[in-house]
Amino acid sequence: MRMWGGRFEGVSDVRMAEFTRSIDFDHALAVDDIAGSIAHVHGLGRAELLAPEEVETLVRGLEGLRAEVEAGKLTWDPALEDIHMNLEVALRERVGPVAGRLHTGRSRNDQVATDMRLWLRRTLDDLDGAIVEMERALVGLALRDGEAILPGMTHIQPAQPVLFAHHLLAYVEMLERDRGRMADCRRRANVCPLGSGALAGAGYPLDREGTAAELGFDGVTANSLDGVSDRDFVVEALAAFALCMVHLSRLAEEITWWSNPRFGFVRAADSFTTGSSMMPNKKNPDPAELVRGKSARVIGALTGMLALLKGLPLAYQKDMQDDKPPLFDAAATLEASLLVMAGMVATLSVDRGRMRAAAGEGFTTATAVADALVRRGVAFRAAHHIVGALVAEAERGKVALDALEDATICAALGASDDSVAASLAVDATMPAYLRTAAGLEGAMAGCDVIGGTAPRRVAAALATARARLGV
Ligand code: ARG
View 1 (cartoon, protein in one colour):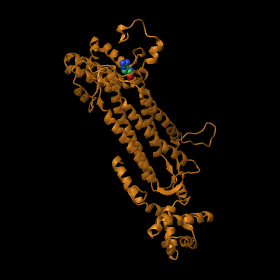
View 2 (cartoon, protein in one colour):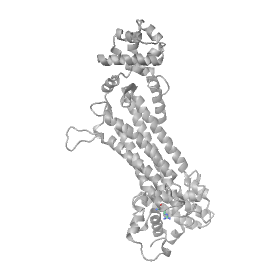
View 3 (cartoon, helix red, strand yellow):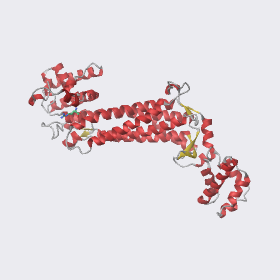
View 4 (tube, protein in one colour):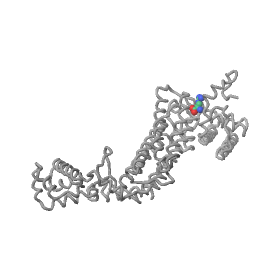
């Protein structure tokens, strides 16, 4: 009982039927499909293509189906290809032949395009909540342990000390941009293709705008060919998901390293780690590793979707049915990753002592010492050279920069061809002045610009994030 079977003889080959059906995954669109159908029935009523009592019967039937879907009571028949056919047949079983009027002025092409936009809209709203949860976990950790000092790195080499809160807030910034990208995507996706028909536009005077408004769309698609074949919104969503996963993967990588005992900066909670079947000593940060790994899957979904659309002629092509598995999978992967990372971050314990010790290794305050010289009038390039020489001395003597002897400091100043530096070599206050600048707190306090790691700047950034997130 194929619904399109009028011109066909015989039965479908089982290989063809199994290969082409989509019900195995597009049942996820059930509630969206029903919402679209209800709005379409109302539109058919307004166009006087359905009598008021037909509208009422169909809408009541569709609402009943929605209740069955929500209760998990509706089962899907693989012989009916997809969610659209399954729901239409289920409706006919419940309301009788009037169900045959539902598909007036509609094609599965504009129907599925509408369903996908409705699905994406609610999924983006759920994901926004999950991103906020992740941001709250980061801010919570920043409030608890943000005063810890981390060795900021470039090239994975010790660079400059930064507040742990500053580092965590960098991820909050990334996630806020992710929210913005998803909001942009939602805005462009939120237009209604219903009324586009199969490709040329419906053959009836449908009030497209009224139907779109009923479904909460901001407007209607402007071109019927584009309306049925546009999947830009899927690509945009996948791009935003992939980038968000990439952000999470960077944090996941850092947590993995930080919890290695050689670093010992953090410890993941037992509830967010796993053991080894063989090595009794092991405690592995599995969720972080898997988030890192699963980012590959979401990147793959994006590239797969671009490849799917590349070179596709207008309008609907069956290839487009395969937009669903990667989109559904990527959204579920991102949501699960956000939630598990939020839990992991919220339960992380921080070893401030280990972090601080590491922050002081590698002469990370050298830049701050050079800046201190510049404040006394030395040219930056000369200051860089002088402090470079001091770092070499400290390395030779196996001492920290703030433990160098007066004589060593004065000799380095005196050897400079910068006249101001040379004159400072005889200033008795200079060694103590530069040693103070070489401390971790002094170094961070010097980075006192908007967006810098000076504690008062970080406190302001944290306050902004708290206000935005309501924590
Ligand atoms: N299952 C199809 C899809 O997801 C629905 C649209 C099918 N349209 C068609 N003319 N066969 O793309």
